[in-house]
Length: 104
Image (cartoon, rainbow, N blue to C red):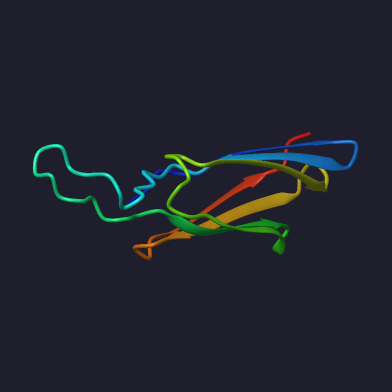
């Protein structure tokens, strides 16, 4: 089980400043285990989606070269009280869904 995605969404003058921190180890598949020397299998977030009031506003695809705990920041139209939902899936099929309310 992964930790919750940290979401910060704040509206000012009809624009939401959206930020999220997806907590994930993000293994590239190129590192080696220090004890055994075996290659650590790739394991990374491959796709994420952001929804505002159930309408998709952002979709992104990530690869193995992104560092641990990816941080995404963007803006989109909206107001305080709107609902924000983030979903993502990794290469092992683990899915995560987190929600928050836009602050004013």
